[in-house]
Image (cartoon, rainbow, N blue to C red):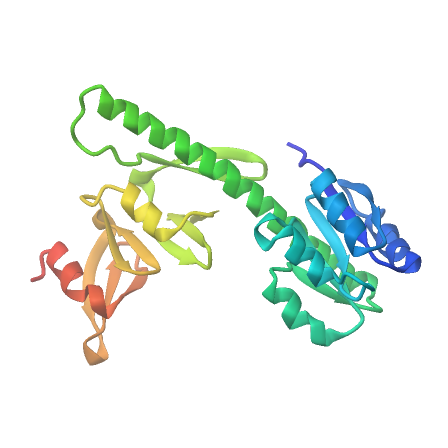
Amino acid sequence: MASAPIRVLVVDDEALGRRRILDLLSKEDAVDVLGEAATGPEAVAAIRRLHPDLVFLDVQMPGMTGLDVVRTIGVDHMPATIFVTAYDQHALQAFNVAAIDYLVKPFDDERFEQAFRRARRTIGLEETKRLHERLMSVLHSGDSATRRLGDSAPAYLDRIPVESRGKVTFVPVRDVDYIAASGPYAEIVVGTRRHLIREPMQSLEERLDPAEFLRIHRSAIVHVDRVAALLRGAGGDYDVQLKDGTRLRVSRGRRDQVAKRLGML
């Protein structure tokens, strides 16, 4: 399935700066340039009117800077943003207002391609997150309907939607070996396969049957049936060893709970 074009807005007070980015964008596949803006107010109006997926935003613009544009739109409502700056000192402040990346003028083709690839991945993951949230909502609604039909037992997830290469599939929870946190994402591990989804660990823990799954660390949930041993390390630390040999750290605050759950206390 071909991915939808990334809809881009280019903002720079210098015509040559805009032309440089537009020329590089013309070499990329699946890009739809929505327009250009030469000032901060023009950028704000264009973002609100066009709703781009990605904005290349000059930091140093007279009157209203690129950072002012972000503050005006609001970080939570701002599209994915790559700042363009003549001064590297602006980089830290750019990231503090949620920029995906930044380009320091003059930048070469390779650096542009690196930033654009990063933006494309981020936009794709955000789309996956939204799709995943909708699917989880549908599944959760189905569970609620089951409860209304007279099933008094809590209804837990029996499958987890994952997206790969434009296709959504469902992973049965019975096949999951463990789940590991990876920044804002969760990595679903099924044998040698790994599926990345944007779902908080706490939310997953609440939706999984505690008779089958056990939180052993803030960054790890294991399928109890996959546990082969609880290993004591130096200093009283514990690891869980799965049947395939994988070792996962048990947090100190959960040691007694894990040991008791596994029948070792």
